[in-house]
Amino acid sequence: MKKIAVVGVQESIGREILSYLAEEGYKPEQVVALEPKSALGNMVSFGEDDELDVESLDKFDFSGVAAAVFCVAAEVAKKYVPHALAKGVKVVDCSSAFFGDPDVPMIISGINGEKLSAAKRGLVMVPSAGVTQMLLPLKNIHEQYQITRIVVSDYTSTSVYGKEGMDELFNQTRKIFMNDTLVDDQQVFHKQVAFNVIPQVGDFQGDETVVEWAFNAETKQILGPDVRVHANCAIIPAFIGCGQYVNVECAKDIDVEDARELMKKVPGIVVFDKHVDGGYVTVNDVQGENDIYISRLRQDTSVENGISFWCVADNLRAGVAKNALAVAKLLTETSD
Image 1 (cartoon, rainbow, N blue to C red):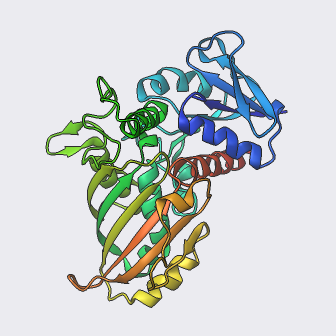
Image 2: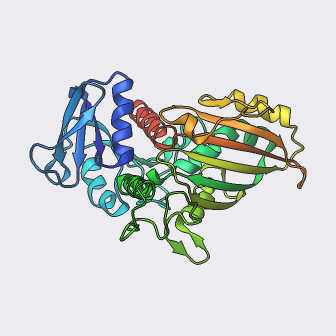
């Protein structure tokens, strides 16, 4: 029986992928949980009732594994992905380790799955959660109206920094409620994250952060080099989820009602847009949800051929886990 391996199960994304696999009906014996270095006896939850042994990536033989999803840092992926490929494993990488390699396509299932044919080594990568969340609702609009420019304001939760980021938010919040002084409580973020908004996600490179750069670079990988993107990214005091305000310009005149109907036709997109108090979806509403939700859809009258909308999703589940596993399935099916 061929198995699927999840590499990086101590990270938030890796755990979410395990949860998704359990919900999809995978049995414990079909899944391998891996960490770069794992002590004997380490376990990780799988579904509501089961646990998996966490095996050490250093010593693991990928024979018998059909597909592997790597949810680790780029330097770890660069070291260990070749080991999996050497055993004939199809690999989906969630890091930026192979960005720019022409033989490693970047895929969003439902948008550009046809590019799997470019995966000459059986290796593909998936974009960051925010890019998947932003682009999937735009699939049909781009095909019909040709998107030329996107401006996105991305408000993402502390989970983008993993367990350490969420722990820092929790600990700061608890201390503030207890009137305790925050001392040495900024280990992950450069400013207090509790009850605050931090206009930095990722390290700076020039006048933008690496995450803001990725919105532009990864969009060009998915939609093509002619689409221009400007991103502004901030951390909000939430544990899970991401909210985005997205402004889109097209080459052709676009009507907001046409845009609404085109979005509704994209699998995994839910349009909930009532122009009344509370007639929209928030970050808190989508935790644990598989879909991407659209609200506040309207014409952008400041530009020609423009629309804007509010978009929310569970960044771990809808942004990464769902897409990574869908791509892994496509990759293994195309090789059969």
